[in-house]
Amino acid sequence: MYPKEFEKSIKKVEATREERMKGLPERMSAKEREEILQKWHPDYKPEAKRKLKIGASKGSFVPVEVADLIEAYPLEDPKEIDMSKPDYSVDVLIIGGGGAGTAAALHAYYSGIKKDKILMVTKLRHGDANTIMAQGGIQAADKENDSPAIHYLDVIGGGHYANKPDLVERLVMDAPRIIKWHEELGVMYDKKEDGEMITIHGGGTSRKRMHSAKDYTGMEIMRVIRDE
Image 1 (cartoon, rainbow, N blue to C red):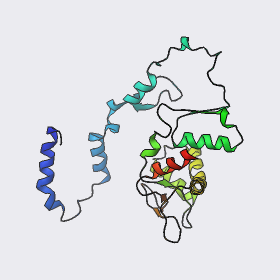
Image 2 (tube, rainbow, N blue to C red; image 1 turned 180 degrees about the horizontal axis):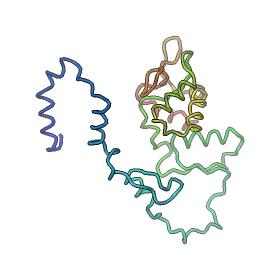
Image 3 (tube, rainbow, N blue to C red; image 1 turned 135 degrees about the vertical axis):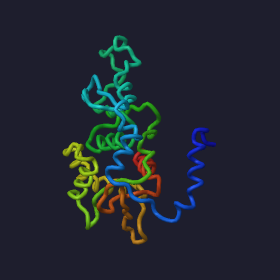
Image 4 (cartoon, one colour; image 1 turned 135 degrees about the horizontal axis):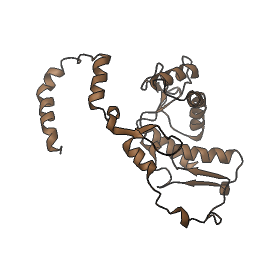
């Protein structure tokens, strides 16, 4: 079942399980955690990232695999594409058919753009995207003991101050409205018997603001907005 190189580690886990079950392991210090990450985590290894040579993010350090993908030559030869004869003429072109792309298409339609003037393109089927893989939930500061300002601080701190402030602001301000929109469409978020939404802690949260649908939140959101 497991690769042969795992056998040594498995035996060690099995041999020490009874002793480890007697109590919690001693917490590592911040320095010890950093040393472990530097030694083992792929994101911390210098050779795992390199600078992008092209594009809007030129100069940014990204995983080597991502850089190779972005810098790769296109499968289509630009010389063979006749831009004077488009296959489709639309007002809105949406790249991607996941949660964001589908929501963009819906809001374009809500704004008055005709359906036949909105085109969504995706490399797979509509809905086959990262959204359906999301399990934990979606955060929104919509409870009395919470606020977008507190949510903002959590996100900025959790991102080690590397976030783009304007995007974080948009995220935390829009989140309660998006949850309300989802509910109006029929997304079945977990609720108490009285109808109040259940919220739980997520990574880096100082308030319980994670809204979830069991452990298939993304799939539930995608189910509803795709049908819409």
